Structure formats: structure tokens, C-alpha cells
Image 1 (cartoon, rainbow, N blue to C red):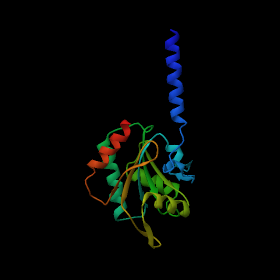
Image 2 (spheres, one colour):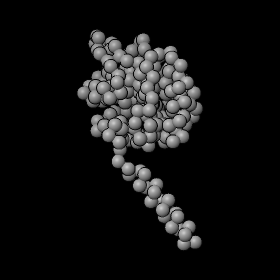
Image 3 (cartoon, rainbow, N blue to C red):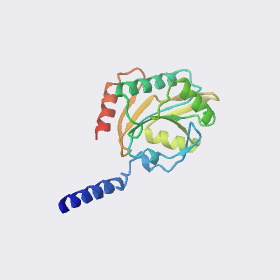
Image 4 (cartoon, one colour):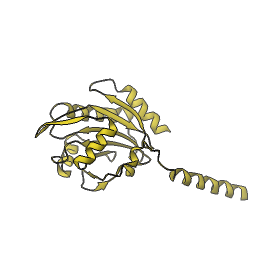
Length: 187
């Protein structure tokens, strides 16, 4: 009985120590920036810690690439299958925070049927958005007051916030990306 008690105590201590491990320097969870979600609540990337996150940067008024990126994200989610939002988040990140208010982001989520808890749409300041884009290797440029030219990248981050996979381009095969998501979910 005593050895069982010691074993359980050791198991609890080990699981607690794993949670308190310091983040690796290249973890996206180290970002101190604050973001606003589609419901108006505030969030930081550290709030995603312990989850696999799949990200893409878009803007809601886009009529060309962004609808296709949103479709790809939805298809990737379907290929992965239903996963609890405690272990995965699909994160849409606005590159047009001035236009993409919480109300606009929320409407976009509803129109595109991103209704489950594993979907999040966020925005921040222009400076914070640029910093994140640089970290994610996403390039974007405002070409008119309502239009941006931008990279079409979908990224997968591990539960520790480390970039595990990136896919650039639209309409490409998503098999490798989905395989990486499933691998990260198993770790």
C-alpha cells in the first residue's frame, strides 16, 4: 500500500513538473502580445499552450485567396476529424485589424460555419500583427485601402508552440499537413 502511495505521489509530481517546464526560446507561446477574439475577449498565445494550433493569416474583406484559405482550413479540420478544443485550435489571424472588428470576425465565422470551440479568429495592433507575421514567415502588404497582397501559408505548431510544419500555396495536397497535425496530437 505504501509503495502504491509513493508511486501515485511520484506520478503527480512528474505531471506537475512537466507543465511548469520553461518554454523553448522559439516557442510562439513566448509572444507577449495581446489579441482580441471574435467575441471581444482578450487572449495571448500562451493561452493556447498545451494545444496543437493550426494558423493562417487572412482578412475578412478579401475576395480572392482568403476564402480559399478558409476553405482549406475547414477541409483540413474535416480530414483531421473531430478533436476536443482542449487539444487543438484552428486560429485565423487578421492582417487587417482596423476593419476586422470582433463583430466582423464573428460574422465571418458564422458565414463560414466555423462554429465549433476549436475555431478562433483574432486581431491585434498593426505592430503586433507585423511581429507575428514575421515570426510565421508570412509577408503582406496593403495595396489599397481595402486590399492586401499576402502569403498563403498554413502553419502547424506543436503543443509546446514550436513550428512543426508549414504549407505554402493554395490548392496543394493537404495530406502531409494533416499527417503532421495527427502526429502532433499523439505526442
